[in-house]
Length: 295
Image: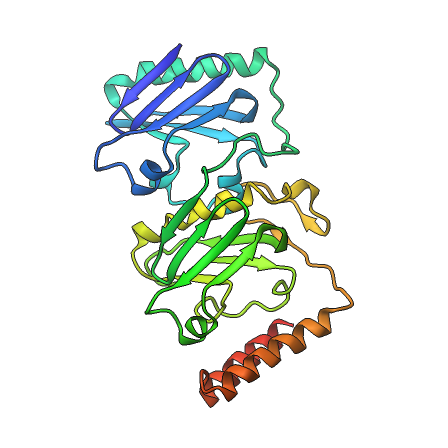
């Protein structure tokens, strides 16, 4: 057993699995503490390294592309401090860190673990049910469907449509961008009908606009990962370009015969909201223009 215990967390390797446990100290980000322990099978590991610095060093693990739904969902956009596959190491423990690295690397060589992208997820992702309260509302996932309950501060178009419930079978993919503190973050659920019409996140009833607490909104990545784990693996999606963990998944929707019907349906929905007084003339014009541009 190769093990290193630090305030930031613990890595333990038994020859077949690297067990990563976040520390309980207040310096450990909320995201890592909430995500909890991760058991990484050796076959999912692409490499591991120790990066020494003057006072502290870092252990880093690189996973094979397509092995982890969390990395697939976040597209390499997790803040470094929230990355569960890094560990801050005190300078006087550098020898232990190097020993852990050597043990994992030796096992990778002995087991001849390939570095090519995987054809299936090798990690399960976050357990379900999972629920996160964000700045725009509460998003929940029970393993079969996503539910979004809007907050009082959500755009009134969203509140007018009521809670949004989306079955996994209706989803094409999940898009996630973290809230960096400037309000451009979002969690969007792309369905077959909405793949061609991406409204701004603040008006899209299939998206959470992440503009509040950066620390809290980051937890929406748990929902994104849990849903992604239950969608077809990116290597098997028709019309998709598989990009792996370093970039967000890119889906190229195929033009279908009902493309025009989808556009008309979205415009009718907007028209009804306008007639009911939910949308002002200006809001209706702006939203309609956004829908038309997206098509």
